[in-house]
Length: 82
Image (cartoon, rainbow, N blue to C red; front, side, top):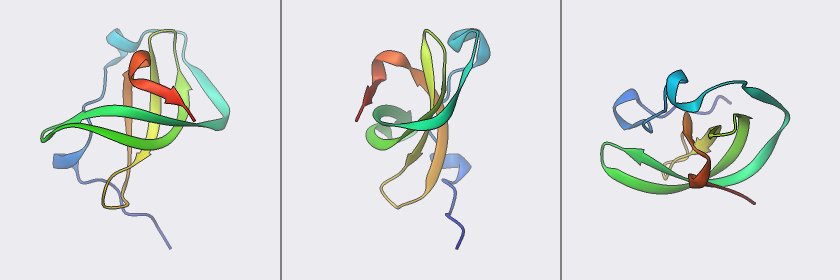
């Protein structure tokens, strides 16, 4: 059974390449994290995994309040390892 994706209008704001920088390190195995994301409706605390990172930011795969999956680049200080 496929996991539903977060609709575009409800996705987290994601940093762009100029913001998150290089080099990008891909996780060999996703790291469990919790993170703060920003959407059109405000800030939300989510649970997920880090799938990539730089010295400034992490790309997370998260699950929203409705059980849908989303991805976003967020600042490193918004992410905590679980």
